Image 1 (cartoon, rainbow, N blue to C red):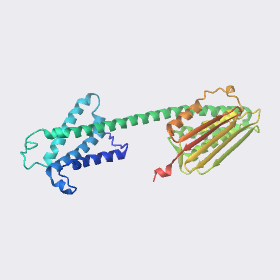
Image 2 (tube, one colour):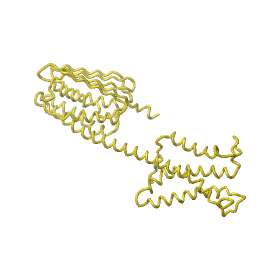
Image 3 (spheres, rainbow, N blue to C red):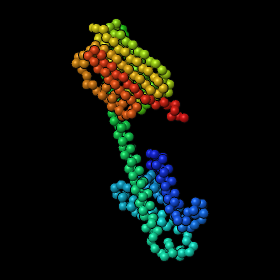
Image 4 (tube, rainbow, N blue to C red):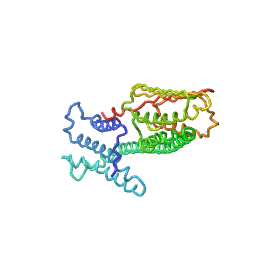
Length: 342
């Protein structure tokens, strides 16, 4: 039996319990600010009824709505609700009998007044649990939708990255055949990261930066003196974590469009860490016309979509695009794994 007792907001639950426990006290005409009120049978029954309503709230929220409130079981669900309502009204009288009344009757006069007075609190507990259940289900559906979208984007990014990398090795084999074995060895490290490590939702930032550096090393094997390349990394990644493959596309595009074997070009990559904030800057010359390279532009599109899904309020991406150079500046608030384990 799957329990849905996953508190979306503990303060909502604390407030609910407090209200239900304090209501019979605050509304009792016998309350004088002391504990004497708990000695009175009518109050004790009323207080017990509210405790039972709290139990019903969580029973409905965590089990009944999940197990019975669907399809063919709907009639059974309403029958269970009716039974629970009767028990909530009767149990206080069974446990705290009215010494002045006939045991067969609920009250002295045998009226159904306890059912009438209990109906509104019961419906309030019922509707509250339904609202909270619906809210939790909506959040679950949204989370699953986001997870599915992220998986799809990741599956699109992986072959895109590998295709570009293989193209680089092919070009290297034509121009620098002696460097091809080293490039294949570096490719194996890249493949391990893309296939194994990137399957996780988060990886160590140090591992992601290592992957970026491996890719840069591979790309530099095919360049010559026409490229002026700089890489600066400042700060300690420590236990910071990041979504895998979130940085690499910007580096891919820099080498794709920022290096031309026939003319001077430059690529400048700066990575700065300030606490849990990552500043990632990539600048490159427009050494190759975008029209000269077949491209769908999907790599950066998928990366931007992943940033929006994974870091909706924790990133800022600024793109500068002039006639001579292209630059991106990504500021990213990262998660510190060590804090989550404290």
